[in-house]
Length: 117
Image (cartoon, rainbow, N blue to C red; front, side):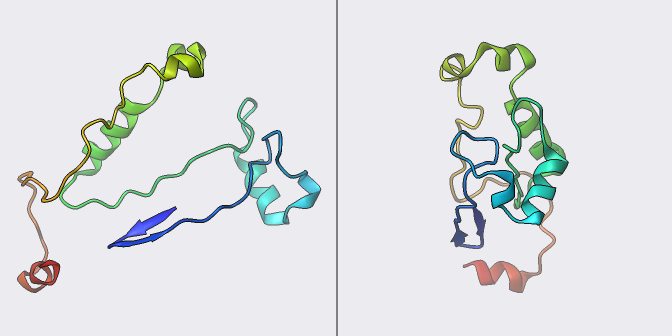
């Protein structure tokens, strides 16, 4: 999934190689096998998520802290999926527009700000 400046693109890359209905290694491209091999985890195989964060007036530290705090601990991970369903949503307070002023300076030009409106 990709999203930026009002545009959204969603694509399906196919099932994970490690999934029960996933393709066999010899059925996928050399590039996909190489990428899966580099990231292979003993328990999760090639299952992974990647995030690209684009934010206005948020510091890298704030973003990293929010994402780190959302990770499961080893004990929570061991509790299994049924337990996870009972955990509170770490992103429960979703963003709404307009953004509140965080006090972080906005280094854009006046013309760039006008383009938003």
